[in-house]
Image 1 (spheres, rainbow, N blue to C red):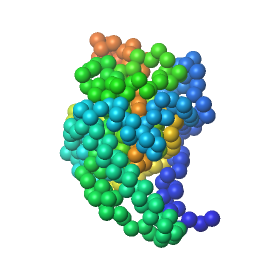
Image 2 (image 1 turned 120 degrees about the vertical axis):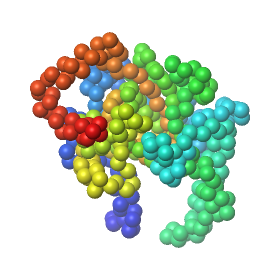
Image 3 (image 1 turned 90 degrees about the horizontal axis):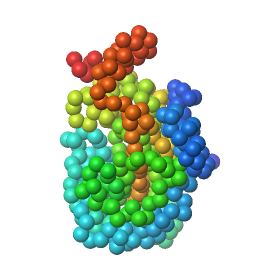
Image 4 (image 1 turned 60 degrees about the vertical axis):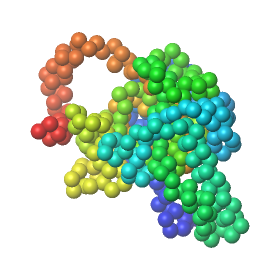
Amino acid sequence: KKLPDGQGMQAEEDAEFVGARVEAGLRAARFSSPPSSEEFAASIEPKNVPAVFRGVLNGSAASSRWDPLHGGLDYLLEKVGPDVAVEAMMSSTGHVFYGDLRSHERVSIPFSTFMHSCKSYLGGLNAADDSSKDKGIGEEPTCSEEMCSASLENSEQLYLAQVSILNTENKERCSLEVLKEDIQEPIFLKGRPFSSINFWMSRAHMRSSTHYDPHHNLLCVVAGCKKVTLWSPSASPFLYPMPVYGEASNHSCVSIEEPDYSSYTRAKYMKEYSERVVLNCGDALFIPEGWYHQVDSDDLTIAINFWWKSRIMTEMLEHMDAYYLRRILRSEDWWIQRWYVLLPLVWLFW
């Protein structure tokens, strides 16, 4: 069946895909159920390749209590309380949140204010849905006064990103520590020394810029849906990472909505080296350290993530750094195989 104009393109953007140049060994593995701790430690984590696990949070307290469509906003309001402040990201580029500090700022807001804003937004969505049912299929619903006013609020550009539930390095930053009571550690992560557990929530549809993290990451969707596009570290030349000596050095320079191919010529091949996975409620994605990812979140999507140091980073002693670097630079094979990585780095440092 042919989709109406515009909907076909949207369906394509929402679907999973694997780029034509993604090596078979770098494609995300799929698991219909969570693995055992032994299987994850022996055959998944050491490969440093993403993996999707379906139903990891099914039946958990968080998934049953936090769902915005089933009273979750009221539950979170009561659980956290009215006086807790959280740090939110406020974007100056609409629903896109870039790593460049000039395009967003971090602001402190009461958690309750964000929850009430979400309730207002949800009420507007419900009103629009009821209006479309009354008018019949095929007619474009008009925006109710409540919905229109809600959509104009500054909070539409707010995103609760990386709000600490657990932080082993800075306990004072754990503004949502009370939510840890609702979180059950996935069985296959048993024994991992987490550096942090974080809360993420979007009020309306939002997009994060392409970036990588310096830790292993398990991203778990509690409510809503996330589309995650992945690139292996070897795709760096096509992503134009920011200079290592500047701000947001783990982010790509390339705009995700209006890429400038005249300035970033190799970026035209980004999609061919990427893979997109779709995470629904209860699903989890293992993102190894160094893997670039760009995330699209639907309205009222809630997620938690677990960060922990990889084995190689845990065992790498700081006083050995100079030796490791010399070994890398002396490797002739490394120079031959990685020349295309070095060229853009030389350009960045020049």
